[in-house]
Amino acid sequence: MAKARSDRPNVIVFFTDQQRWDTTGVHGNPLDLTPNFDRMAQRGTHVYHSFTCQPVCGPARSCLQTGQYATTTGCFRNGIPLSSNARTLAHYFREDGYATGYIGKWHLYNRGVEGPVPESNRGGYEYWLASNVLEFTSDAYHTVLYDNDNNPVRLPGYRVDAVTDAAIRYVDTHQNQPFFLFTSYIEPHHQNHLDDYPPPDGYRERYTGKWIPPDLAALGGSTHQHIAGYYGMVKRLDEAFGRLLDTLKSLNLTENTIVLFTADHGCHFKTRNSEYKRSCHESSIRVPTALQGPGFDSGGQIQELVSLVDLPPTLLDAAGLPVPETMQGHSILPLTKGETAVWPEEAFVQISESQVGRAVRTRRWKYAVTAPDKRGAADAASEHYTEEYLYDLQADAYELTNLIGRESHQEVAAVMRERLIRRMVEAGESAPTVEPAPTHLSGQRRVSPEEARS
Image (cartoon, rainbow, N blue to C red):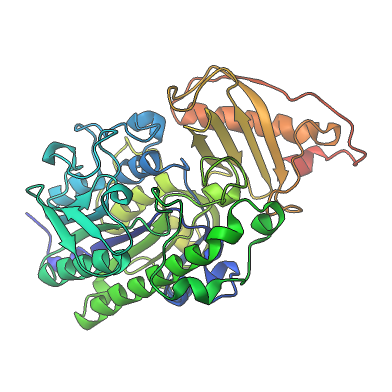
């Protein structure tokens, strides 16, 4: 028998695309882009160190839907559909009596199929208003989604507002039953056919010539061309988020609704490779994440390193549903209560399309490897990797000095190599061989084993 409604909180996921963690005020951005997110992070639970486990759209989405790494879901690159047999959040909530809805960008169906998604490939969601690859079926002021019958639906307004209006309608019409709503935006992702970040009219001008993160200021890329528009998109997203929170308040649903705000990956503005993501750097993998509602109000700031695969078990746990053993992440709910003894010391990242790469990050160190004989679009993994990057995040938070191969940091590389291989095995991969980088003198003091394990 289904539980009483008061025992089952509603759940909303507000999911952005390509949003850097440092677009938010709680992470030091001085431009007041995200007052609504910042307020929720301060009053609810702020996941201060939050990372994607795959810095590319489709694979990251497969991880967030299933709580599994991309090599487990099979969606290790864009264009690989999520298996119709995959168990998603929608399945678990639906089986517990929840109404389930998906609105926005999906990106988990076949390559080359831009809009409609067959029901068998919708991840178990009951209500559907989405596009497989929203950046290809819409533009800033031309939003087209597809309904349950795969009919195109043209929504009015700026795209962020069009998707948000649809989400608000869903909440309003489902307020008398427990619901799980996943709202997936394309913003602040670039508009592919323009190679631009189109904000609402007038918003680009607000942020032209304003603050630039240190990595982008140092490395350039397309930053000066694009960041004002990018900031404008972030601003409108936060305004939309505020409207959604206002909706919950007006319907007396705030106290009984869990809200998760997160993103699939970040954006490095062509500073780390020839496009915007698909790298091990913080600019690609670190994202803003916060929660509010039952279990998360006054949860404080979580300092542990949390991965995208940890969020599905977190939502199930907070809603009182069992967490399946097939999920490879861990609920963060115990962290809100100060229970940290068994939490992993590292965040693990798989990288595809640009390369076949792997990375592991601790509080202080970032270590990454690449497979020299593999192509990221064709191969999910490799048996052989070579060392590529080592960063001391304590001294070099924006990763401007690569320490790999330095004689002074050999102990660090050795420790991180062990950590990486262990995490790969835990994720279901075979233990690879990792070839150390050629050693060169640096004139720096040798880092101690104790520091290497920090």
